[in-house]
Image 1: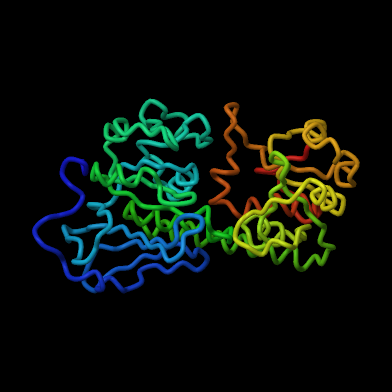
Image 2: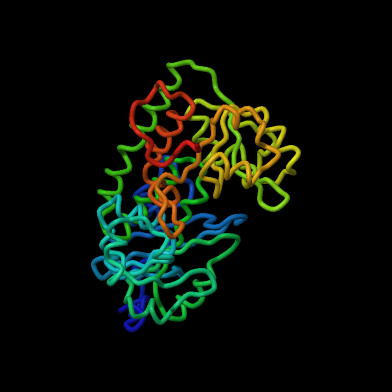
Length: 369
């Protein structure tokens, strides 16, 4: 166990950190990670860039030691001894990525078991522990799970778990898929997770099929040359209504599906609040309204947004939510497996906006009735 035997090897170093400058994998769509090797070495360094919101020029690195090679001089990050076979995942998207590369059985711990949709995880509740979340992490349970590595994420800063994991000498790696604006970029993080399990080739193979299917769907929409309907997002949060950035993942998907985002003012890199009056005007312009939060029927939506009941998209019933695959406890598979199926999300949205272009049934979206 790393916490007992030590994550950093003693007895000197193998070369310099600058030796690891050979790009073993440079993502085509993701911007948050890269895998580097060194001449004559089996070990690699996974570099993760700006892994939380608002980070600027932040780089974290994981050294994966193979064939007994030691971390190079100048390396100050966590060290994973060999390939990870016991993994604690703090985000549900990590579960989906491990499943996509055939490594979901490597999970020994997760965060928020009741909200997970993955069939393997749900059927192995006796062997996969729930380690808690946010400020309520059970480190004794993590130690008992004997992980080779913990997969972290940061929100507005470094994870609060980082310091304790260093103290326990448990390796960790940040996974910043949620920050990627490209739907394909989010999915490409499966290659980084494949690397830590020693099976990069499978990750590359599984990912390589996605752009083909995704871009074929974009081409189908483009060739149809249908009018781009306007789309409204979300529901109010208190007295504000948060609208995503023009370059966000959600907006990229609807544009690729042949639709137009109704709000053009947000050119930043995060959602911005608008008042309810402006939201009403935007909803009045929209042909469709998607991502309606907790509302799972037209009546529930009208109850949440009483003044919006007369807008055209509501009157026409053009309201869709991404909650088709929800768990009884309140989990939503859209926020889990959709990350590795951007083609299926795109296909769903094309079916919403241009129903004649696809025949398949919805996977993640449903029409509110």
